[in-house]
Length: 78
Image 1 (cartoon, rainbow, N blue to C red):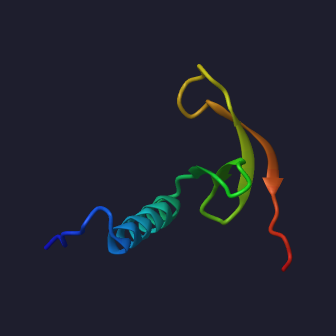
Image 2 (image 1 turned 90 degrees about the vertical axis):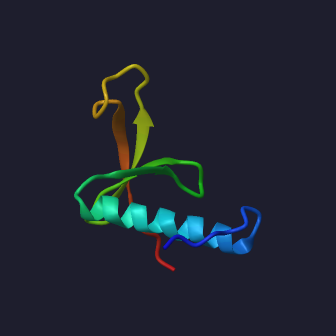
């Protein structure tokens, strides 16, 4: 059964974030890349194996061919 949330509530915000995380994980698990803008403002493609790439969108190109990889992003040591 669906739970009702007040749209202006912290609980609603938390539920939306959790749903987004689940969708992100399910998409990667299905073998599909996920595209997003990271905290530094970079357009990123992440693959199921955890590798991330900075990409550039190619306006007008067909779906699936509408981006190019600029570079692989590496994890920074803490």
